[in-house]
Image (cartoon, one colour):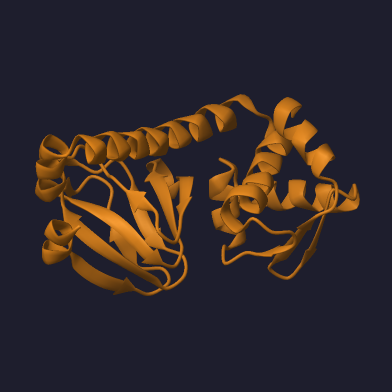
Length: 204
């Protein structure tokens, strides 16, 4: 811990600011202290796919950490974010000198990669109602862990989480409201029928 603290760079980002940029060199690991950020892949024609929401105490490893590599995604602050940049070289030193640290770190890195991969697979296999259901359930159960929940995201960002256009996302969300699955009040969403949403996330 002392080795890492001696070389960390602590930075604050305002909402909307880019923390990591896709296709740039990767030399640091990002550790969140507070706030929330979106991790997304930038596609053609300004189409983005949000693959993860990062928040308090999480760690983001972008690209390889054994050598200089290219970041495969962009990370941008959704709220005000306070985070630390840790030189990957220091992490590599610890991986070779501390077996317990190496095991825990690699497990964390694998979990991050697996979560993003699962997101891509799930969204690719679902129709629009299933995609929206997956997004809403993840926000409730994994990001905010409460119901109802207040979202700091725009409708476009919610659509980017669902691999949809904003217009399609808004239309499906409206259908969910009419069906009694959810209710919305401004930027507050409440899930009224979690079983119904879960069924849609599996079969929709």
